[in-house]
Length: 348
Ligand code: SAM
Ligand code: DTB
Ligand code: SF4
Image (cartoon, rainbow, N blue to C red):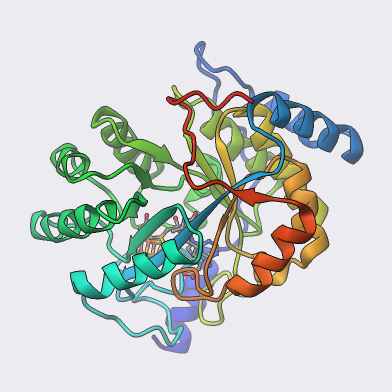
């Protein structure tokens, strides 16, 4: 990619003109305004409310550990402005083929041995082809066979793909809405928000649990943060897992120079996700390496009860297992061997 192309990409990713939030539907449980009012609460009141809701639905101190593996890295045809794996951006990430089953099983077993209960396989595809889904189904079956919860994030799915993955034993599918609909086109223009919603509907119809969240720190306005939470919380039902990512600013991506997020504003997003989606696993996701222990502790106080666990996210770093083990011990947080899901009834 040349300097001119990069300049064009940067222009595409300029902050949006102020836009009215999407019109509310009669069935919506939450309005954007209601969520903004929560985000605007005094910090201590908001965190107290979130922790109160949290304790009504989960045992105190319970945390889920989910390990990520990039099973197919780089070379993606999409232009998501945050992503180091897009072929459009010069980030130094080399495109690789889909990993072999043995290699994936070894990584999954190591994750299990280190204490993870969920294993999430990520692929840098816009949408997998039939033959890709067949191969990933083999991976899912093998990982499931180790006694781990399985998750995959492969891009847009057709209904028959979702059914095939469900039959192979896929427990969760991760597909993020990333931001509010009004800001989406400032971040990616090779697909639409509706494309994302359609895939989520296909995943739901196939009986796979939904993992869906977003990213904070992409130059979005407060109303867009509220708009993202409104979209997630108004899904019917809302997602079982909600990853809240803090943008990892990767050199070469159009969003590399975004303003860092105020850590307290990030904590507020966790708190509001907890309050509006009380039984979901709210995952403190990308960005922990840049966050520090005290901010992470505030996120747990605000209701986060899941992390990505392992030295790497997909292509960028994550706190190492030793550091996380120490942090969790210092905070009295414990991973359980059998994670309860909403269907199993996770009220404390
Ligand atoms: N290609 C598939 C897709 O886009 O759905 C799956 C992989 S994609 C990397 C999964 C998610 O990772 C994205 O939706 C985005 O939310 C998150 N992500 C990617 N790059 C990120 C970054 N630099 N910082 C934070 N989150 C990021
Ligand atoms: C999610 O919400 N965050 C994860 C996972 N789902 C797939 C990915 C984070 C990626 C961070 C940058 C990278 O390593 O590529
Ligand atoms: Fe491709 Fe997913 Fe990265 Fe977008 S987020 S460029 S779809 S790998």
